[in-house]
Length: 205
Length: 205
DNA sequence: GTCTATAGAGGGATAGAC
DNA sequence: GTCTATCCCTCTATAGAC
Picture (tube, rainbow over the protein chains, first blue to last red):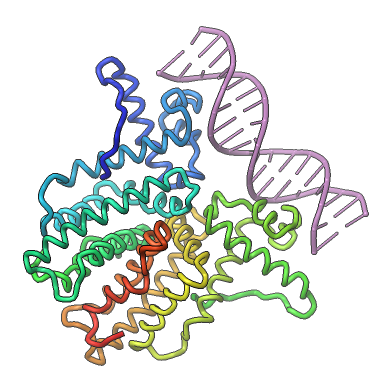
């Protein structure tokens, strides 16, 4: 979701390599989602892909670089689904709710990955710490702008601050992920988010 | 917070051992809070306590048992602060908010521990998985009863379901922990929780 | 109760053959 | 691009001395 300065290699000349890289990143997402970054091993990722551990390290210099690749891929995925260039409005918030629903039903591994990595990356020494600090700041400002627009349109409930509504919506999303991962049949993340938003908005979602 | 069936050893006869166990559990809380259970090592915990790793394993048969002890200690801590026998009411919710504030300012390590462990324990194979499933179910029913009492007293906003309010409050608490751990100076967890509750309640907190 | 020593598994990274 | 082999590290757990 954060615009990153990706140093992409030319696609045409290294088609096979690009495909392998992609396979490795997909496997990395799965393994890190289940075991976290620190406990997830590149050996296991290599096994999923079907190559040796040394073979994997031909594509990524080390484990940290692989993590960076996984986070970048994750951002690409989210960006495909959300229109970042559209003006901030109630539709931004609607899009966010749709994204949550989409993630839960179509790419649950992404939810797992975010939940586990964001938690372990709260430690300042974690290689993804800075990434998550920047990412949360960015999403917060993105959503705050949306709630600000809603307020400007006279559709935000009295006494609600756009910044607090944005922070609350992010917290609600993250927190619901834990409960959903613990009990996927009972928890409906998108519905709970709508329940959160209803008292804050003067319009229906 | 969950009432557990603790098998305590008699205190008088093994005073020194009980003290050591306690030291180990405190150190374990810190190390698991920073590195998680899977990456946190009993070696490091032993180092913090100032004994050898084999010395530590005299007090806990293995790493899983140490984790169980840490979780039990954590529950004891929380239970000291919340009155579980009081009838469910708006005061239950007030107590919960106070607990959040207390944790953030007095025992930040506990917040870290919960955040990291609950995330990695979403994996069904994690040794604390069942613990967290039970714990969340318990807290949910506890808080739902409180919101139900609030509704019975005519103090819950129209259209709000007690169960959804309870689940939302838990999610909000968990999610705010991530943001707070990433940026402790900017985020005020208790205040944001109050912001969440304000539109749901007909009374002031 | 605590130690040293060690077994045995698994981790990341590198060297060098093909 | 991928492999095998290897180095060196860290980890949990156990055995046995004190």
